Image (spheres, rainbow, N blue to C red):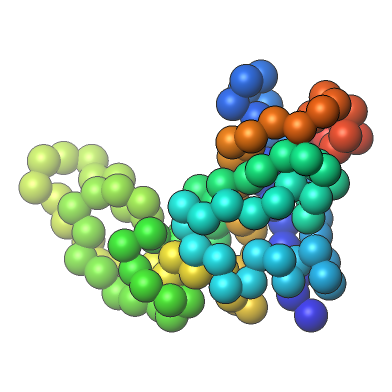
Length: 128
């Protein structure tokens, strides 16, 4: 069974909450890609809507939205997700994960897009 840590960002307060999900709640994320929405009830936020913004796999490789599927890809990057050059013109070959959430994914980054009733800090137990 899949297990993830979901980093839920609250854009109104600027806080981020770490929530561990497993079993049926984790299955709601499988097959979703960066940019798609998920019901907040998967992380304990009933009535909220979350947008997937990124994540990383079990080795810490970042997910990139321009790589389809769940496979690993080696890309020559000039910047962006997975590589930040220190000088102009610098490039590097980096291994990244596809934009789709799969079994190798360990962390999912999500942002609250639609709010339900209740305070996010109280609903998620005040964990930061």
